Amino acid sequence: MTNIAIFASGNGTNAERIMDYFADSSLARVVLVISDNPDAFVLERARRHGVESVLFSRAELADGERPLELLRQRQVGFVVLAGYLRLVPDGIVRAYEGRMVNIHPALLPAYGGKGMYGERVHRAVIEAGEKESGITIHRVNGAYDSGDILAQYRVAVKPDDTPDTLAAKIHRLEHRYFPEVIETEIGKLQIRERMRLLLISNSTTAGEPYLKYPIGRIGRFLEGVDEVAFVPYAAVTFSYDAYETKVQARFDEIGVRVRSVHRAADPSRMIREASAICVGGGNTFALIKKMQEQGLCAAIRERIDSGIPYVGWSAGSNVTCPTICTTNDMPIVEPASFAAIGAIPFQINPHYLDAHPEGHAGETREQRILEYIEANPGVWVAGLREGCMLQLEGGVLQLTGNRPMRMFRRGVEPFEVEPGSDLNFLLG
Ligand code: ASP
Image 1: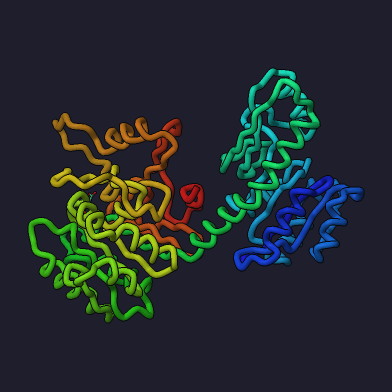
Image 2: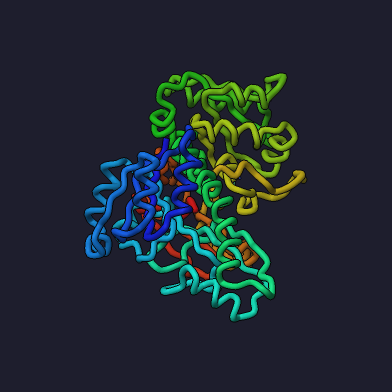
């Protein structure tokens, strides 16, 4: 159950819709309404709903410390700005990064920014002769109306519309969609908090035995698990049986039994009944083709979303991304599509390599990834060097290993992130 706090400065019809919407929800509930305005009717609405309401002075809200303390005391996990006219201070924005949304009564980025609220927005839209307007629900960052857009809904502006009639149409959109978008966002956050992923760049450090370096971490990650469902389909030049045997030999050290899905009459059912999943490396195209044919992408996604641990190495890490487009492998077989499990919203390039052999004229790894981001704006690619892994647990994504990870996204100069840094920007 996620506790919601609503910040509002005025009448509070949106706040009331949200309180009503979540009144019987098993997902979330409104526990707090915060206002900067002693005359705001939203305070009365909160009282009627039996929801705690707190008035802070402008100075307290600008400073943010006391409101943040209250949010923490009430274990608030999600903040909604519903007609809140002040800038939220940095401390609260940082504490609720990715967990705070605002609604704006126009189609941002148009008709937004400081001073653009309520009637002024609608008047400006009509004066500009716009044919449509609408609402924008977006994440909150430190500036007015400029965080990532989550959803927009549109409505026609008719020649005889006045700011009042347009406002009424916009309010209908707000009341209909704002609670739903909040619910979707909270649902996604709850899934992310449940998810347990260990995504390893490579199975083996050169000169060492197979899976030797990561086995300690895999053992800790799988603590309490007796058996994993293993997906061996990345194997190409050796049999699935041989792959299972090889992995089992290493997993014996951590007391975990490996059962390969290729033996099951119904592999997707085996995944649905598994208490942990492992996907091994090899050729990513061979792997995804068979996973798609057997319906394993959806089955694995379902299990990951429900919180069972997933361990992947190399190709097994590639397939947790939205697509397999940042693999290093050759397309030796043709899958129905490049779509993968999509458990994480960014792409991984495993075995990320800086070196470029002397006298070799082919593309560097960096050049190949720069081509990918050129064609796929808005997507992060994580160049995961050998010996490194990403772990997602309790909603926190962490890089471990002794080397940094190289980050790519169109329009951003490639940069390095060190193990232990905050990687939440990758979770979208
Ligand atoms: N072939 C790699 C593996 O070992 C995957 C990759 O390089 O993309 O699974």
